[in-house]
Length: 631
Image 1 (cartoon, rainbow, N blue to C red):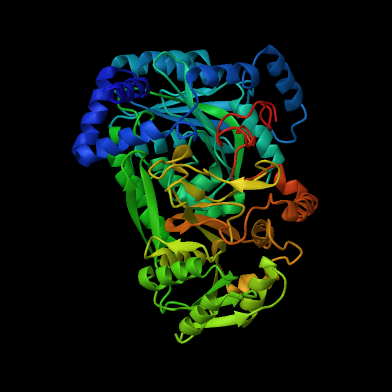
Image 2 (cartoon, helix red, strand yellow; image 1 turned 180 degrees about the horizontal axis):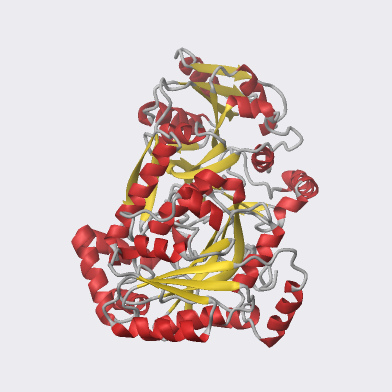
């Protein structure tokens, strides 16, 4: 009962009232039954310590006061910086309104008027509001500021048509989208124009965001990563604050009727298709305050279920336009998360699974048995790289499995070098794809290889990594984060199964700088193109270096939670902290620091406002952040 009461209190804060919390859980009960509510409560109970929740209001408030307050001093510095801008474009802030709460509407307008960057116009379309106060407020502000333009629609057409009406009176070079009850901080447009000057080739910009409680307190910040095409296919990470080149919006055809609730997501998908992923830039600052109001999706996507249906349809149409053979499904109700399921190419390309080993026959048998018993992928072979096994039971097992038509044993007597062992096997592999696999891996999901090949086969993708779990069902590998603890570390490490992670990132496919080679799939042509694993790195970081070189060659690495395997980590090799291995480990750390110094300080898959301190939970606030409000 304490857990239930705590959940209701937390949801009441999100929804703005206890009545809203009760409505939320009643809706959850209808959707998922008692088991769905039970799972939600279990996640709340086990989530402590893994940044599965936003910071408390007290912690976030103190952080805002120290690092995210735009006072008089910052205002004056911003003016000095603006004087150096090569470009000072007109920004059209586009807003649809309908029977707006007068207090929220005036706060929205005032937040635009308070912008330190002066070259803006506020383009509002009132969608035939039936409450006279809305028109009265809009006319009042039009008379006070000639930068405020309003079109009054005679017929209610809903948000897409209203947004197009507002867009029709926009004359700026760029368009910023703002909802009628949300607000912008005073430096929002200044920051946008600063990034326009930094990235003159870019056509789309987006920022971090947080939410406003009913009392106007900032809460629940979302510090986003840099542009992440795979993550964008699971959630609308672009909106709030989303800024488009006006010509791009017009080329895309504006907002589409029938996508209400996700009209901005549909627009962003179509604009990215035209502009290209390289033309999208992330601004790592909170430039949008999303109001939590009754009926708003700021509190819960379940408030507007039609919005999720529209998002799924927008994504399905996007996949058709780019000729991707894939389907879309909703994998969770709350948070509302989508999954794109890519089809395996037909016929299924051959995958060569490379498994280095030295004795440890029980682990190897468990690994290979799980592959044969649980893998539904139809076309693969296995190359076991025997690095000097001496035990009779191991050699007997090799003789047994080598009788299978799709198993080969490659004997290698050299001293242990993980990179060299894999490279030698890759040289003789006949698969179109390679799968690097540790001997202590055990398959969980039967379609693991279908998922990884389906992702690896998409244009532009490089290395694909899997979700690896410890036997106690805590996460061993959720992708690799550069700079964590110095060089690199695993994301959401030791998080319990059933949790979503930071804004769902533990349960969605996403682009990352690196993934582990304990289970990694890649086209053999890419492996050969970059020269395989670096044999200077015999044990540690060879997979990280490999993935960084894949990225350097122009490919995007991907981590997927939909390929799940157990990892009995390093059971046959021991710890890098053993005295006889420590010196080698230190040298490999130094090698990485010298080779990839620029990559270790800033990982595009992580936000500079979030900590890299290995003693703190990941995705908690950095103190101080690695960026400044005026950067």
